[in-house]
Length: 98
Image 1 (cartoon, rainbow, N blue to C red):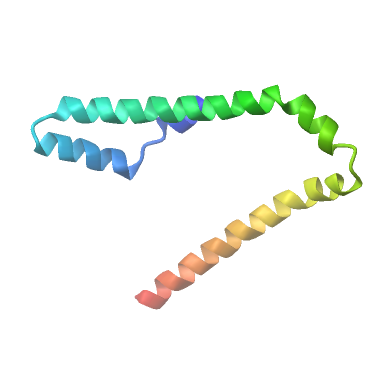
Image 2 (cartoon, one colour; image 1 turned 45 degrees about the vertical axis):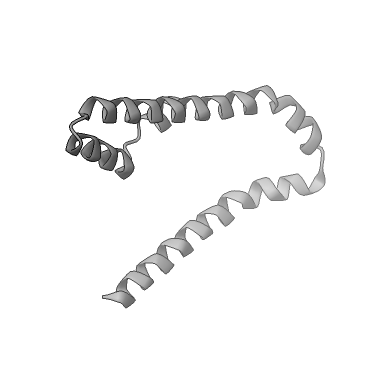
C-alpha cells in the first residue's frame, strides 16, 4: 500500500518539475517530487502498520456487538452508492456548464 501510494503520479508533481526546470533547477524539482513520494509511501505504510497492530483490539471491541455485523454488511453498499452519486453529480454539473 505504501509503495503504490508513493508511486502514484500527481499533477502537482508535473507542475513542480516544470517550475523547477523553468527556474533552471531541474534537480531541485526531482528532489522535491522524490521527497513527496517517499513521504506518501511512509505515511501509508505507517497507517497500514498501525491498523495491523491494533487489529486485535478493534476485533475485541467491536466484533461482539450486534450492530457491527449490520455495519460490515452495509458499508460497501453505502460507499459504492456515495461514489456513484458523486460521479453522477460531477457529470451532470460538467454537462450543465457546456
